[in-house]
Image (tube, rainbow, N blue to C red; front, top):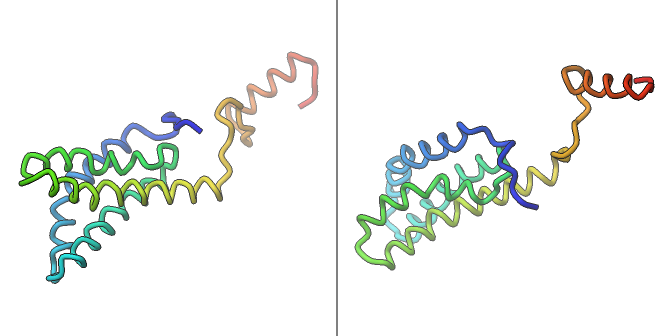
Length: 146
C-alpha cells in the first residue's frame, strides 16, 4: 500500500529533523561513554538510532521506514563533509540510517497490525460532529431514517 502523507502532521517532519540534529551529539556521547570496545560502541550507536526511529514509526506509521531518513538525513549530509573515506561514510550510514529505518518500519508494521485503520476514501461514522450531520443530511435527502 502506498504511503499516505495526509495523516502525518507537518510539524512531525520538523520534529524529526530537529531530533536528528540535536540528538546527534548526545548519541555520540552515550555511544562512546565508557565503551572501549569498537563492537560495543557500534552496537550502542545502532540501538540509539533505532529507538527514535521506532518511536516515530509507532506514533505516525503511515510513512514507515522513511522516518529513518528524516531522522538521519541531515546529520548524514553533515557527516559526509567530515568523513575521511567513503568506507567510513558507508559504515556510518550502516550504523545510523539502517537501524533508524528498520526500527521505524518494524514498529509501524506492529502498529498497523493491531490498530484498525479506516479506509481513507470513506467517511468514518463518528458519534457526533460533522460526519454524523452529513450522513443525516444525506439520509434525509433520500427519505431514509437515520
